[in-house]
Length: 575
Image 1 (cartoon, rainbow, N blue to C red):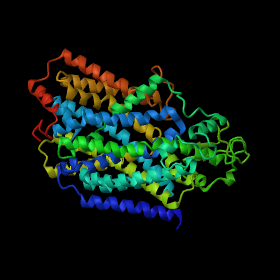
Image 2 (cartoon, helix red, strand yellow):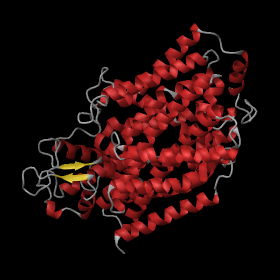
Image 3 (spheres, one colour):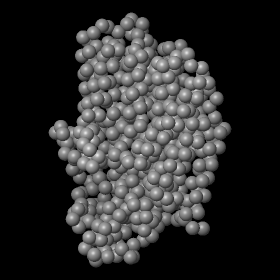
C-alpha cells in the first residue's frame, strides 16, 4: 500500500471517530453547549484539557523551535508547564466555585460592570483569534504534506472538519472529541520519538536518550550535536545566546499568559465540583508532561538527523547531491515548506549558518511531521504522525472557537444586547458566531505572523497583559473596583498590542511590513516577551485608579470572600 493511501485511511478513520463522538454527544442546551452540562469526569476532563492545551504549537512547532533554537527556546517548556501549575493553583478552583459559564461573565459580575464584561470579551476575542491563527496554520502544514495538497487547501479542509464537530457538539461534543484526540496525538508523538531515540542512542526512552551517548560517536548526544553545529558555523545548541532579561520576561509572559487563557480556564467549568476541578488539573498536568518531557529530545534528535541527511559522510566531507537526496526532501519540497536554492550551481546541498552560502531553507513547523520520514520509519508511523498533528491542531482550535462563540452569544448578545433572548435563540447565536469565527480564523491562517509557536506566543503575551491580572485581582483583592479593572485591562492590552505592532513593523504598509522581530524597542525586550511588562502596567493602573476612586461595594467584597473558600461549585453565586 502506498503512503498516500495509508495516510488517507488513518486520517480518515480518526476524523470518522471525531464526527461519531460529536453526533453522540450533541449539545441540546446552552449548559451543554457552553460547559458540557458540568458533568465531565475529572480524568476525562484532564485528558481533554491536555488535548486542548497541547496545540499545533506544542505538537508541530515547539520541537522545531527547540531544534533550531537550542537552549534559548527552553523557555517555551518552562513557561507553558509552569503556567499551567499557576493556573491550577491560583485560578481554576476559585473560578469553578463562582459557577458561571465564561471568563467575561466572572469579570462582569466581580467588577459589577457591563463595561468590564464587554472589555473582557474584547480581550478574549483578540487573544483567541491570535491563538487560533497558529492552529489553523498548523492544520495547513499537516494537510499540505500528507494529503499532497497546497497548504491553503489543507487549511480549508481543516476548517470544514472543525465546523462539523464543534458547531454541532458544542463543549459537550468538543470535550469527548478531545479525549479521543489526546489518545491519538500522544501515541503519534511518542512512537516516532522512541524509534528515533533507539536509532541514535540505543535508549528507548527519548528523555533519557537525550543525555545518553550517540551510537555513531560514543560521545554524549548533545556533545556530538554541538560539534556538528560548530563545524557548520551554527551557534552552540546548549549555550544561552538570548539576554537573561528577555528570556526571563518571555518565560514569565508564557506562564501568566497560560493562566489567563480563556479556552483553558473554561475547561474547569465542565466538572461537577470544585474538588473535581483540582483533580482534573492534576490529571491534565500528568497528560501534558508525557509530551513535554519528550519534546526536547525530539528537537535535538531531529536536528541531528537533518544534518546527517545532508552530510551522510560527515560535515568534513562534501554534502549530498540534490539528485541523491532521500525521498522525504522531495516530498516536503513539493509543499514549499522546504526549499533548495543551488546558489553556486554545483548540484550539492550546502547547509551552513551563512545566509550567503546556505542553500537549504527549512520551515521549523515541519520538523516533527517530517521526523519519521527523516529517520526512515515505517509508513504506518508516518500516517500516525499526520493524524496526531491534525488532532493537536483541531482540538485546540475547537476549544478556542468555543471560547469565542460563548463570549459573543452569552456575554455580548445575552449579557448586554438582548438579555431576554430564549435558550433556543442563544444556542443558535452560539453556533452562528462559531461559524463566523471559523471563517475569520481560516482567512487569517492563510497569512500567519510567524511560525505556529511564535504566533501562539503573541497570544500568551496578550492574555498575560489583560485577562490574567483581572482574574487575579478579582479573586484576591477586595479593593480593586470596576474603574480600576477597566482601566487596567485597557492599559495592559493597549500597550502590549502597540509594542507588538511597532516591533514587527505592522504599522507600515504591507509591502514593507515584516513578520519577524526587528531590533527590540525597549532594551532587549522582544514582542513575545512584552506581555510581562503589560501585566505589570495592568496591575499598576488598576491599583492606582482603584485607590483614587470609590471603594468596592460591600456585597462584592463579601462575594470575593466567598470565592476564596473553594467549597461547593457555584456556591458563591448560587449557580
